[in-house]
Amino acid sequence: MRICERGTHKDIALQVKRIINCTGANCDYRRLQHPLIASLQEQRLIRPNALAMGINTAPNGALIDADGNASQMLYTLGTPRKGNLWETTAVPEIRVQAANLAQELLKSLKPKTYAPVGGDWFIGNPLFVLRKPPMLFCQLFDKESSTYTYLIADSESKTAILIDPVLEQVERDLQILHELGLTLHYCLETHIHADHITATDRLRMLTGCLGVVPEKTQASCADCYIADGDILQLGSVEIKAIATPGHTNSHMAYLVNDTHLLTGDALFIRGCGRTDFQYGDAGLLYDAVTQKLFTLPDDTLVYPGHDYQGRTVSTIGEEKLWNPRFAGLSRSQFIELMNNLNLPMPKKMLEAVPANQHCGKVLMALDYQI
Image (cartoon, rainbow, N blue to C red; front, side, top):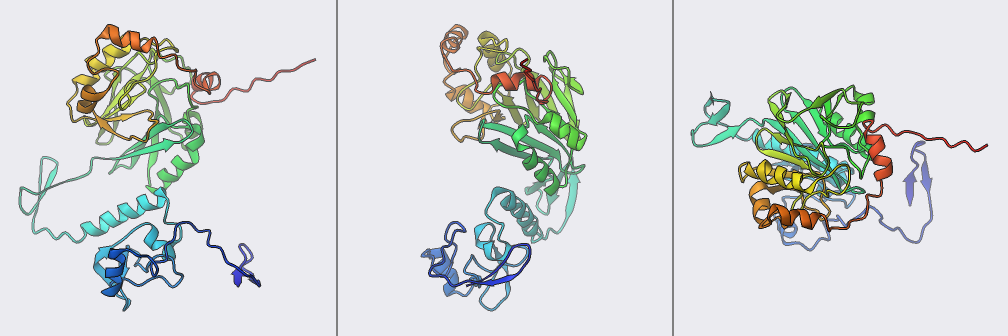
């Protein structure tokens, strides 16, 4: 076999007995036994890549047929484009491809008339409404701490905010900001975390963004504080703070554009945050969730600060009906339940809490023994 050495681009010839493909799942479309692939091949609507990796596609994702013509109707993304793009199997690449493909497909719409009405764009038939997207909303995940970080941006000004960023994921967040052409204005915290160290200080140093924490937080590092009812504005995006004490004494939830509720550790999907440290109070948490969050419209989307079972989003209506911590429980029953959970302390608590009181700046303690 002949290989090209990385860096030097020197050709090297090797005598080998076997070649093992370590590039991941099989993507040789000439051998796949799938009805859709077989049908496309029979109709000569696809052409397998010469490297036996996926199929040939045009730069916009259109399928290239057996005669070398790009389709005007058939498109793909992800693994099928591996032969052309190679880096095409992970979420960051697929997300960008999906956004680009969406723009490509929108080009095929040929409306006869446009008429702006109250911020909505009506195309042709007034019953068909195409709304201009008010914001970019991205849910990111840290596997070690099961933490969700939320990237929110105004689609026109390209100004962005990160909510509950994680120190170990700074490079990921910077890459996404770069890929999407966004300028980070704020890092916003729901509370002082005990299970991970925030990336606010690091991102503030690298991007010049401002660190925003809830008022009454024992943190002297914030550029500004946010109080109950305050609104943080990013172009057309409004982020309203809702005080939800109980998990900690200074916890905040954030309602984005009246549709997306970031609940932090106050309300999980089918659960809630613990109340046994950092001045937690089960009664206050019950009041905050039932009297504030559960009074929002049932179709309000619920995005928690953590999830340990792979769930990503719920609604206020679902949680009112099915959350076992609240549904059918009185305030006293909830307090008794929370006071008897007997959970182990978070593994990073002794490190995370003091660091997060300084917006993620890790304090070094030197022990000199003489």
